[in-house]
Each structure stands twice: as C-alpha cells, then as structure tokens.
Length: 259
Image (cartoon, rainbow, N blue to C red; front, side):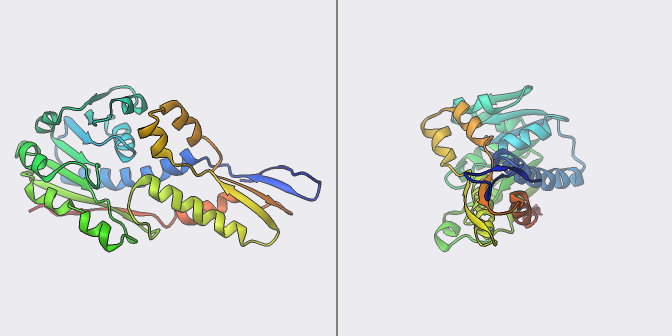
C-alpha cells in the first residue's frame, strides 16, 4: 500500500505507511496469542477462569483473545492500565486471585512476578501455568542472567507448564514494544538505503514513559495511531513492504516444560 502526496516541489513525494505503530504491535501480539492458544488447546483442559499477570502489552492482547471462551482477570500493580482493557475483563492488583484460576499466564518479564509468589499462589488447582520468556535471540549475558523464567516454572505446582518464546529479529528482549521498535528501525534503515529516498522518519517514541511515567493513556493511544514510517523520495515506494519483511521474521512458540 502506497499513500503519497507531493513534497515541497513536484519532484518529490512524501510517502506514508498504511500501517500505524498500533498495527505492528497488534501483529506481534497476534503471533504470541496464536502460539499460546495453540498450546492451550492442545492440552484439552477446561478453562473456566483465566488469570493474566501483567497488562502491558502481551497481557492486553491475550485478554482480548481468552475472554471469548473464559472468564478473564488481569492482575497488575498499575491501576491506570485498566483503561486499556476491553469490556468483560476483570482488573485487580490482588495476587491471591491466581489461586482460583484454571490457567495462569505470567507476562511480567524481568523483575515481575517473583518465584516466591509463584510458589505461594500457583498451586495444584491451577491446571496450566505459562510464563512469557523475556529473553530473545539477541539477549546479552546480563539480560540472560536476570531471567528467572525457569525458577518460576519449577516452583509452580501446575500439571501443565509452558514457556512462551518469541524471536526472529535478534532483539535484546521478546517484549512486544522492543520488537516493534526494532521493526521500525530496520524498516527505516532499508528504505534509507533505497535509490531515490531522501530521508525518512519512524513513528518511534518512548512509549512506556508516556504510559508509566506520565500515566497518560490517551496520549499513548494517540501516539500508537501515528504512521509507522514516513519517507521523502523521488519516486513512489512502499514503506509497508519494508515493515512486512521484518514482521514475517517473527517466530513465537510455546515450549512445553511440564514436569
């Protein structure tokens, strides 16, 4: 898709991606949701109650999907994130709700849900426990050493345990926003190396600062709707093609580590 208009002179085009930042976030989230749903469905377990620990951003996407067939509660310590959740999703900061669930999905990543909390709340009544691994194929040693995913898994008493792993972009973490920024950065770089491209900008911002420091969810939503890429070029060229190249590299899968 090419959205274009004339630039400062008739010799130059301004070209906008059809995809906004939000579209990239959603596509990455969809890949994670598909991997999660495929694994959960393969277990053939009745899931009346689902608890997702961590709302940003994987948790939001998972809540949208799982509310179609399960009662969903999202647990997060940031109350203002409730505004980002859709209808029919419960929100709380009470970790004791974990013990009442059939399925618990931990998306909190580095420094999130502690192994001690897992030991206390993820009991044998919780049939399925899934942890999103915050590391990815580009994680350095410092990040890998901080990753306690296996500690959490080993301390859970669930019959079924899995680890959601996402990679393909050589990013430092598997975070949805980390991967989004990497796609924007690489897509822009490819376009800047194309013949006839004068310059370009990507829809990058420090999104978590807006959401967690400013606590301005409306501003966050508006920034997410901005075009992913805008370039100035001598001839029409599709920014979306550059983005699609990297979106297709994303690989998300659940490793079954039931003990």
